[in-house]
Length: 323
Image (cartoon, rainbow, N blue to C red; front, side, top):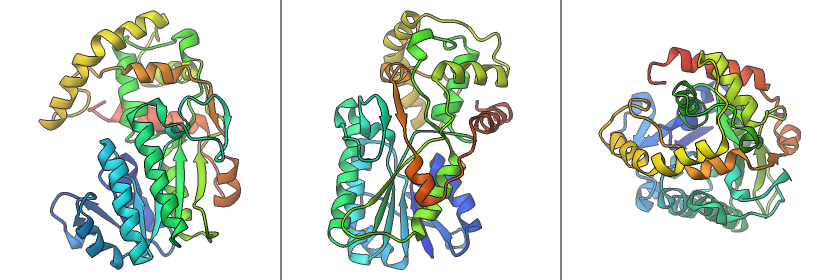
């Protein structure tokens, strides 16, 4: 089965490209805006280019949508992908996010209501899922995966920058503000779920949807302390919620602008202080817990336990100079 990875230079897409060939019968190719190289199984493709998608997709049996970035890249990219995948009979595995559940709290299953009001990212992800559902309604094949916070090697969002905040003394045990559930999932578990989704039998009429999260994921405060100790950012500080919120509100906007400029200039993560987004501070206190039993039943998932996620994540931080 020949599989195209959209967003193949990102965290999940890059790791998927490395490991997908280990699964019997799967051959990975990845797309990017850079010049392609057939010898390295890469091709040049803009995911917002409908003509390019129409030209490329007939050569593939499956496509994995790992595209991140702007609202347009996520939502409009999904619309164009599903439009062209329907013409080519190419199976789509769409990487969504727990963000589609918005402000929900408590145990959340795949049939829980979607809530696009959490912010632009949640709204784009909900819209993208709608396009995937329309593809299946037209007779196409698709699977939607909703991972929690993807950790493990290469995770700048949930490992790298948190490690930098811990080392800088800007994060630690934040009390009740960190009482939300992490819903961590190892990047390799996400890759395994994608590999199985590419080959599993599918029912018609609606896409198969699965939450992805390790069931023993801790609360954020526990993770912050554990990661701090594991990477040597000790002593892990106790910080008031007020202090962390002030950091996010006062330092967040200028640091975000500086980070965006640094990215455009090719400056590596960690060379400048990371902004703590106010939305992330709110997320750390959100009492949402993903129920991933459906993925275990249908995809045969054997989740990487929290302690192994922590060890792999910390080892990556310790060995990565950019962290």
